[in-house]
Length: 359
Image 1 (cartoon, rainbow, N blue to C red):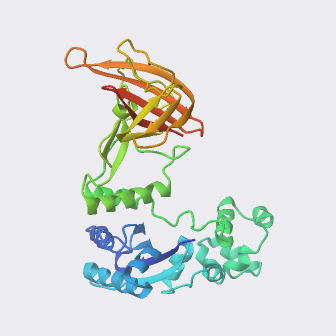
Image 2 (image 1 turned 180 degrees about the vertical axis):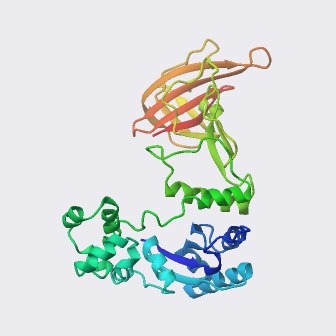
Image 3 (image 1 turned 90 degrees about the horizontal axis):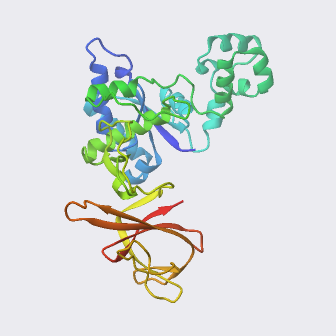
């Protein structure tokens, strides 16, 4: 498991009436991006970042600690508590205690903590009656015994104590990413990608925070995501748009006659690769003006490459666009090579191109 560097800024833990704590916290995040682009805000005043990458870049853990403390002083004028451990739960404990846990030592560190750190008053009270005073003692209870005596919330905490889950359910402030986006003016009101059951997970929030920081460094066009829209071929339908740009979930209702049917290639090339198709006699396969191939595809060769045998082919599917002006004539052919690789080939202006690949 990756070691995390935790940063605890006491002056920013509580929001001030004028909202300055959140603004200062956002400024600190922006400065820390220069140290590590994967800084992750957990709660107001508490954040983490992976240690291994920055340590290699700066020449050691101590150099990273010095850079982080300098960033905090520059932004807040104060100091911060620093801790290192594996997993968010252990990292927060280490940060509160200003402890750097050696690699591989987080389990022992977690087990040695007082039972109170799990944040369940009923667990602490009952645990004392049972003679349980540490996280490790509670972790050693069989799950069946915990299920008999405690609530579902405590059963989840028991998994944290055992190291099966690495953070408490309420350890993150789920509102913080949205508050930071609102502060920076990047909130939009279109539907967001949800999890499997419709929920927005902590991973989604972490990804959004990381992407924002990358865009802050690279510019509005620096981070792009794929979006589908109307078109007839896969390369026509896919386009890249800036992350966080307003998007719609409605598909283009146009019929698009001649659209290539399913399955759609999983990979479409922005720059198609020139290929050649040969029939069984070794003659090049051409696409005629009558919408037919001159022969059955038998082998395919990349430019300056050795031909590879074709196991199966389908098509062609002719496509003529803009007939009222300078028409564009294309045709698609699906090919499966003998090694199982599936390709989408397109012919245009008497040349063949590799335009897509199927998984």
